[in-house]
Length: 171
Image 1 (cartoon, rainbow, N blue to C red):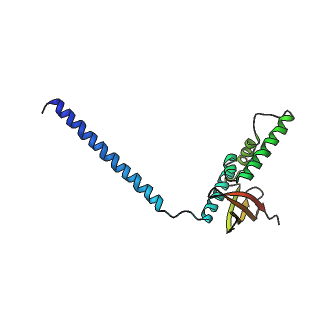
Image 2 (tube, helix red, strand yellow):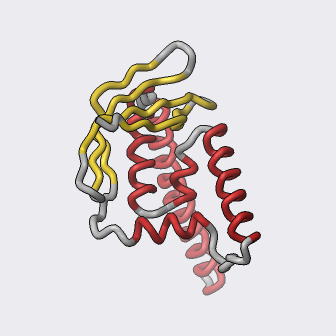
Image 3 (cartoon, rainbow, N blue to C red):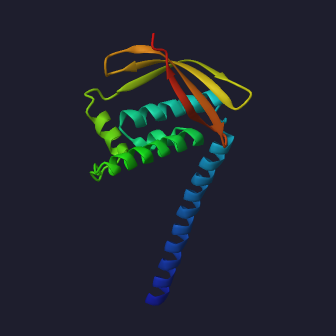
């Protein structure tokens, strides 16, 4: 066998090994994909709990955009409009400091010494027939140290749940 034939044989073996590794890797990916397809879909209650957890995490991290992502379309649009009006008013008074109200939200949350400004303990979730849900929670605040009852009103949009409103029972 010549040197050229040995080199060609080595290249062929290397290519076959690469194809085998790639095929096995693809089989693992396909098996993982099939396992995901077989997994039970999340219930409405699980989706709602996850959304409230996402909201608390975004709020406690001062992530204004993350908070907005947890809101239903109507509420998100309302918040955006309020922020735009607020920034326009400040700009009208010559107070345009190059920061937005969303920056002030992040700054305010960042000044709270506790890592979790708000925590929510879910008590009940009631899913209604009209793609809404009511979630009763205990709300604990690091600011002022209060704990009180609260209620999320949730709205289902495109198969997922979003926050429509949050009310506190100021007793």
